[in-house]
Length: 132
Image (cartoon, rainbow, N blue to C red; front, side, top):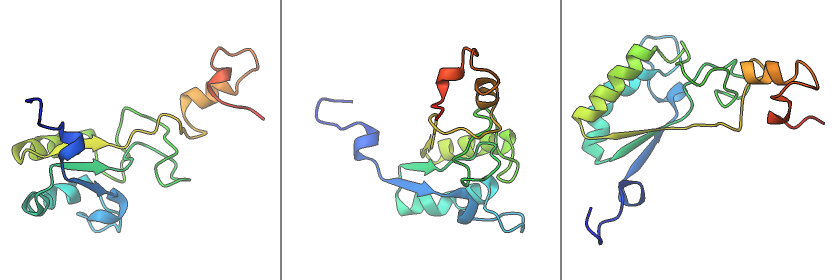
């Protein structure tokens, strides 16, 4: 990058994908990673540089994925880790970057950190949450 070229996150065209309603590939009524993959040629044709994907982590879906119960997996309603790997491979072929919507300040009441935090007033993770 030369001194006059802006970094990609400042100059690129970013397209947000809300997976749940973007493209359903298997007919269950919920968009998924394979659905995103199936539209990558179109997104590339639009000239986008980056897709920003709303949360796809496991979640009880009380807040449509923003209530994360596991930060290191994919919610089965959206696909699998293998589907995610395929998405990354396919976006790389098209020189499209991927940004995941990471929400570290929101966890589900089913997340292990939350469960441990509420287990006792003396728990080391007790102050990871604000208790009223």
